[in-house]
Length: 286
Image 1 (spheres, rainbow, N blue to C red):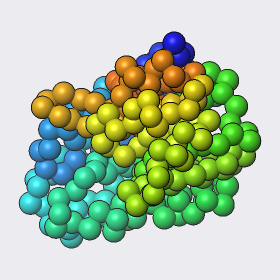
Image 2 (cartoon, helix red, strand yellow):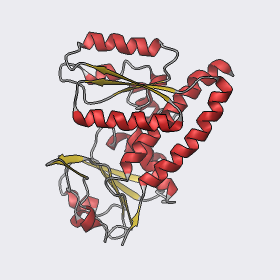
Image 3 (cartoon, rainbow, N blue to C red):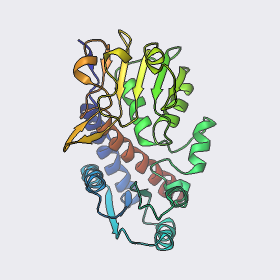
Image 4 (cartoon, helix red, strand yellow):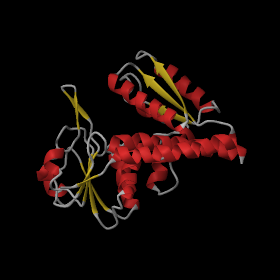
């Protein structure tokens, strides 16, 4: 039986630490950290995620502003809104909730957020800095995974890390973070041949494709660390990428879903927001 990598427990510990630190900073600077979330349309999943983020902000003492715009907003209107948020000195972090409607160029919009307020770490400048191992705002999900590995003293140096999925949100930044820790990294994707032969070599297997229960016991080496990033809704029920009940008896460590990576993504969003706040407010006041 594997050891459960409890993201919910760790996220709570991080929030408690952030709450204490935030109170000290508010007393010092007389300004509360402020996260603005732009939500376009009425997608139920996006609305749920935004509520989770708002609640987490409130728990640690941040100000959270949700700016909900119609699905029919023009790209130019959205661009104007982002420019206003960039210039607003009372806003320290900006998050554009994805996905955006098809008539809006998401990459263009995301890259309009000033890099200093880019709590998602999606701006090209932050992506480049991460690749060059410079100080950057790192995408929240990969950052959360590294925090889980640290919490459970899982050393990745010299280990073979296989990541299933090559997205800019998880797969590619995750690969950079693991390379920085001296892991040997392989990325698998939809065009990979003999994928199971590759994943069964993994000391650390990170599944981030969004296909319900794709990874069963035939993908996993005995004693591997298995991280499940995926979230898929099938018949109103949520599933991860990993078939937990089959894999848990093979893996040495495994994240549950829910309660694994998800809570850590939001915890690291809070950490990124505080980092933006310190970069902006601290530099002005110190």
